Length: 430
Ligand SMILES: [Mn+2]
Image: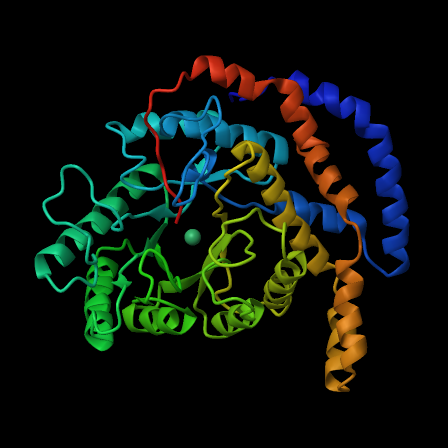
């Protein structure tokens, strides 16, 4: 087992913080026990929580205007794996990487897998890319890919997706995520129904190539890069496409891909009910698909989403096993710091949602006691579960204070020396 950061750096930091943590944990444990909650059971849940990191998130993001890369950014997938190893080592809750093809294509996938295995990391969902042209491709995606009016373009896009499945098999992945930027920029440019029919045909062709134990996740997005219409624009089109395509084809919810003020937790509930919730791309949003850090703008919304997820877990809803992943653009922060912080913020929402007294809540719902129902949720949300999260990390030999430990390790400064800028790696965000 290799470590991205020397374990004694982590343990030296933890040694300084352990006695304060033990006291905080004891106080919170006593408060929770008065409500009949076992803090150690909650801590075990926190220890078991895991969220995947997207390979492209380890580089600095940008806007349509500019990108301001930081120093020591990963220049290839091997270096991205090393950064992901830091994130998992310190957070203790991010053991899987989600790769993006062709950005992360390598000549020897067994070498890449051996590299990730050496850090104890695995591979989650593989992502295809038919929203930009590659230097060697015959057909252009300027006017679409899986829904293009030309059969030759559609066939090229389908072939790319089946190729991505083959690469994913070599890494041990079991999910293909498909997002298309297809749509239109002008009213009248595209025939809505015909474009959707072409999409369904293409999705079914990809699904036919899916191994029997894989899932296919469809990601919708309201706008961008198309600014008038998008073929899979909302959860309605998404679930229709998933239902038409097959049982193991499910919908993926990216928190930033909805209209402003949409009730996302209710969408989540509907998808759970019809066994079509594939997973999440967690991030936060102020105006649109801002790809801001999880929990930085609407932490209560994120909690309410987890309230639905924990409710489904509590009810043992059949077939419920959504995949969690971050999908953010870090424009002004160190991506490693943002990804550590965000993974923990998502974990925080999960643990708070576990604090909701479901029997009490159901009683208030049955009696139409709106205020007390709302207060039941708020009561759980308002508990500071930080000592539980820190103890979960401590018990997994991760960092009690991940950001302070990361900065003390000087990982970024060392990467700046080891990874001089080559002018490459201009990965985008989806
Ligand atoms: Mn996404």
